[in-house]
Image (cartoon, rainbow, N blue to C red; front, side):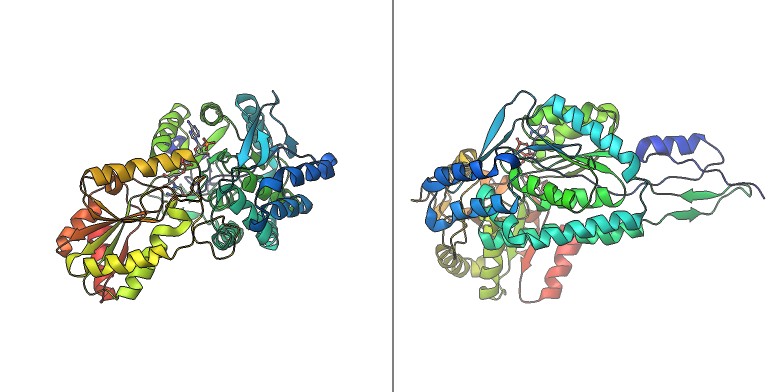
Length: 508
Ligand code: NAP
């Protein structure tokens, strides 16, 4: 019997090309996997922990003690999860030139920590570490990798309160939502700990008697993972979980606005026994770090969640070295309310879909499309529900709306509201900065919105609910589809089956 010949290549275009020109070969493989993770924070080192802690106490005095900000920081220091350096090859590292970035609490403006402002050199070293670690990590059995991931998941859950407080401190979302993010984010690690053992291949019938065709899935290599600030934990675990499960190593670049959660998660990855170099975290100059990841021939995949504009740049930049790319970009999700909707259900559902994370979620209902027969009733009931949302520091019990991430985000919201009102929209509720100051914005309801307004064409990424009127189902479908960015549909009507059928057959 003829021996089988295997050609194992690293996925993608190159592997397919090789398989085409090499006769006697079985192959093709590679699976879906994504990014990586790791983090850094800088500001306090272990050796000077107590000193820093005193420093924190002093500095955090201005942070409203009622909201528990100072206590939260102190607890994080005690737990060892307030890391303030980058992670390269298992070593907590400052920027080589000593530069740093301040991480602010958007609810108070206080500085939580300084982290290194890294660039090309640190990223190059992080890539080298990941490249070296790939050799051994990819050779572990799936069961061994699975155990590490499971341990990481357990640690994330054990520290869920600490992680949630960190998320609220640096990102601003209410603590209850932050706890939800920890559970959601940790679940990706749990899921991929299980999937690690199920990376099956295939046997393909050959047209030639002396050939055997196999599909063997292999890890691609080093993955560059670039993540946004709105889900500082979950966007990392969603990328790093699958990458590590199939044997890849990662260089994570979290947003400079929310690096602390990433660093804490990386610390827990180390504690879980994930070997040094498998997870690296660099932060700082986004374009320098991004360009270095893109230019490196050792990085075989880029996984990114963030704005469409940056996603396009990365996609173009990845072409130079023909890397695989996975992109999760901006959204413009419609929420459709039909005349026969249960008003109570429609209001509650729309409220949750729009105002989660103060509207800073890619699947937020960016456009609430309401049938004319229920429009006025819905608008009144919805506005009174929105009015009840308590705005404030997310560490305070009962707060449902935190601040926006920064001034730029508030300016964007202001300009969208201004554009809408100048084109005929009416402010039913809110429409301006909140009296709390900082980056707090009043939960807002706009009526008489149409498709020409910015607020219905682009992601507002803030607590503004535009209500658009429609007459017929066809109108609703047309309005909902009048975008190139939707990534979620929410329908509310009396007959669930009909609504779902409608959405699936015509909207997706
Ligand atoms: P962003 O401005 O695109 O930033 C995302 C990440 O890219 C950050 O880490 C940022 O770094 C980095 N970055 C910026 N410029 C870069 C460059 N030239 N090269 C490499 N990296 C670069 O997006 P964002 O404002 O953080 O996040 C909000 C967006 O994410 C929204 O559009 C939202 O819809 C989208 N999102 C989508 C999903 C999804 O699943 N589809 C989920 C969550 C969020 P710095 O922050 O350090 O500058």
